[in-house]
Image (cartoon, rainbow, N blue to C red; front, side, top):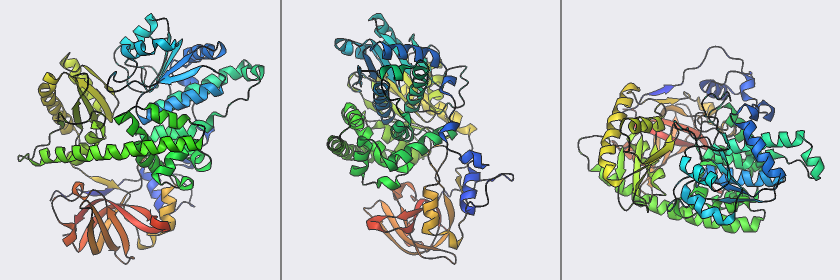
Length: 573
């Protein structure tokens, strides 16, 4: 079998972390570049000024005038969890700041496609908006912005996606990835950008005495951080220092008093509100919210997030949960078809582009992520869109910027790609069907060149070994809440050799084990989606296994026993 090296992360020799930290937790922090107690200071006062974001002065001037003059503001959202939460933050925040005519629209992904398109502008003309405010989109919407401007609307763009060579001719653009930006982070999600816009706008309105003159309470915008945390984690942006502050306080808000929509989503997902962590946002709430945009209309998800009534939010959350189960059924069928095709390839090659006429365009993003995890290379899954174009969704691996790779292909072969956009780890594109074979070959060729420059060794970096006394519920609990963990700041992962007492398959996909480290206790362990972890051997026949695992808690039916969640396994001999 193809064994992977399990390598403990290198640790810096010099640091100033306090001695009171558990030695294992200290090791985990050091392996992620946390060298001092200041790096663990998640005070909101440490957030950089919103006015460091490029375009913020023009944005607050335009948006401030819209609030003062009570203009009709229409928020143009995206149809994923980041776009939905950004929309909810914009609507709630602007209303709290005193705007009385704020509404939203989400493009029909199957009919109008992504972002502010000319078609979307035509569709909203009857609503007579005076200001279009984009959230999590707009930086690539050159034709849509032009159409809106020609119709007499102001266009304000808030986005975090990478800009192209030319910017839209909007009245104001705020994006941390604009050229020349001095903002200390490029990792803000769309919802984070919108939150920052509201903070800057509140500061400007406060300076002129807006709240006292109007007799309204100055809003506590930190109460929106539950939505900011959800969108940030669900969009899988890097949890750099700034995003960790936002998510940390968002999780505190959720544990204390979330908005009714998030409370309802927690309930249908079976999550304990008081113990919620970032992983729950990414793996439980995010997929249920995204299901609306993938299968139907993200308006349903945004209505859930905006609801002020818990019973109403519960009805909407149950509908989102039902859509998510339908999404899982569709995804399972697509995965089976993709796996059958890949298994039919006998030369051992890894095919990074896949397409089937029956695949659902709202689910190809998840399929691309599954293919990436199986192939260990960036992957693109395509479906046939209702407009006749192939809609592709790409997912990448650390160290390979997928949007830049698409930009290279577009620059060298103009017209081959109809549209594309995205960021380092995820991107989307559209092709004419006849261009698919040529694009697929070019993508595989460029990808091979990129991968040759990356390390060929598929090592798994861990936080080292645990001693027998470390397999405790107290340490597992401490690690669980020591984050927030996520993209770029991964959950603690350990490795070691274990004696196997028993092993059993569950639903033909998951493996339940009873294992014991040297001089340690017998422990429960579970490896989900076994086919992705052990293709070349039968773990049921092994007496000793080498594991890469997370130290978790088995909380089934109130139990809080230690459980290992296995990410990789191989026989010792």
